[in-house]
Image: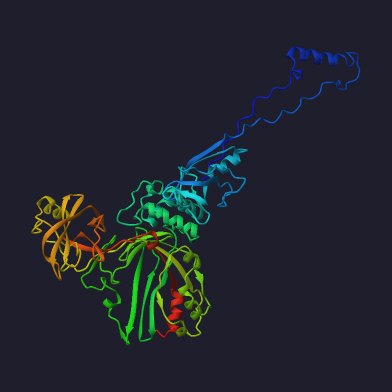
Length: 571
């Protein structure tokens, strides 16, 4: 908020030139003499005496001291500090650095900037104090996290609100944009950004020291949120942050369509009424339908394993869930945002929707496999979600208010699930603490595998992976001979490796993860988790091996477009 302008100083006491001031006695004498000189007392003229004294000159205007010089200093970050960024004070609030606005020199490797500005008057001083700071990221800017490559392929701008300018980064940019677009206070804008990205408010300004994960290419933390936000800004995504008072926005999207004819098809929809719950999250439901040879596909068969397995459960931030459409997932509003569901943990952002109203359905669908040229050039994978011969849409056109959305997804965590709660328990342990205490590595007998714990899957066709705990933070792993097909009767073990372990609470349940799971023939990682008073082994797909693998994009028709397509296809 702009501060009231300070009142100008009172003018100094005026002191006239000394020739206009006489002592009171001398003044009286002069007046008397003037009267006497005009006729004395002998009955002469009564006209006032003339005077040769000039009237006093008006006082000069008061002198006003210029406002003191203003200083700004701080640092520019994306992942880490940014070199060769230029910071300016956005005096005219147009979101760009203009030539007549105070600016810094290009930042050095530490990302530090300094700006000095001498405002012409109090009005200019007030404007500059209320202005946000902008950091211009150029194509030669370098993030110290990756010193051998440039930080951007395109120029883009980061910003920070006037109230907090010591750090300019992608997350402060979301805060400042929300304040500018909605009039939100700093505290409300910070809370809204933290909610949509799933991070603590304080990490908006301090995420650089967060550790990188050894078990994921992109860690699930504010550091990755900043990188994703920076990329979204650079790519020109449709950035949005919602206030809790903003109206609900209902939405339906066609997430998958496989169509052969009206008797053989499958489709999936994601939809929400957009209404927030008490935590500021919205509810999204997964709707699926299909037929095989004219017969409705059973509900369980609409989902692929492991979700279709009757006794499977997925651990999410909502707790253990059946992921067969029975439970809605809770996600924040805004772009970019972070969500956690049966499919894992994702950051996502979208671009402005393309209006396809009145366009030929067959023509639009036929061009989908080409994807987006801009995203293809960035090396982002296009994910196919529609299998349909466009000719089957005939000459139909999309109805009014139909749109096609392009969404970029960044997966940071793969889903964790218990395949079968009826069979996948580990002993009779009531908790992870009890499991760790009961299986110390010091008590292991390698010949008989006594003292080890199973549930960690196959190492190869003739060996299984078993473990025992060195302490509460480390597990020792062994390769043990075992009998097919269930890898029973473990024996003749050999030390394989040790791995740090992390026990975290997800959705109210404790989950134990191995930070360095060995390379095996199994397609999944394993770990242990608590559920319903017991310990189970869980499965998790192996993480992406590169950032490029973690990124993908998909094109989604909205509900109006799907309603038209559904009619054209005879569904």
